[in-house]
Image 1 (cartoon, one colour):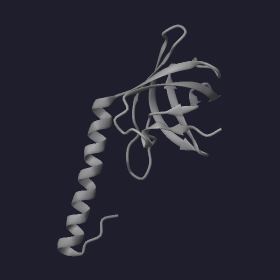
Image 2 (cartoon, rainbow, N blue to C red; image 1 turned 90 degrees about the vertical axis):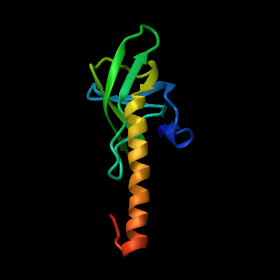
Image 3 (cartoon, helix red, strand yellow; image 1 turned 120 degrees about the vertical axis):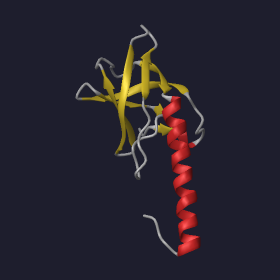
Image 4 (cartoon, helix red, strand yellow; image 1 turned 60 degrees about the horizontal axis):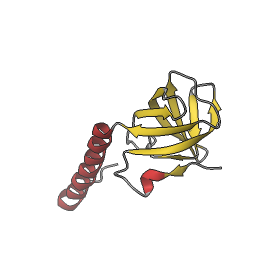
Length: 121
């Protein structure tokens, strides 16, 4: 089962519920769906937290990457298990800043190309 990428449907999503479907080396957690954007194409990944619903324990999401179609969330501390239901919360200040920088980079690269035939890669 591949992680459903919620950020593709709603880039302004700040929180979501999900189920843990895999855990590797105790600290890499795969969810059935995720709003966390993974590091990709020069864009930094989202940060935030996963809160286990049954007991309220919070795990910091310190890195997010895409591995074989799944979104892998590196957490601190460890302790999530397959089957746990969590509430994901994104660091919205960081997410919104990354979105603005990404848009600005596209605008500038378009201007460089239009005005000076300079390609930005």
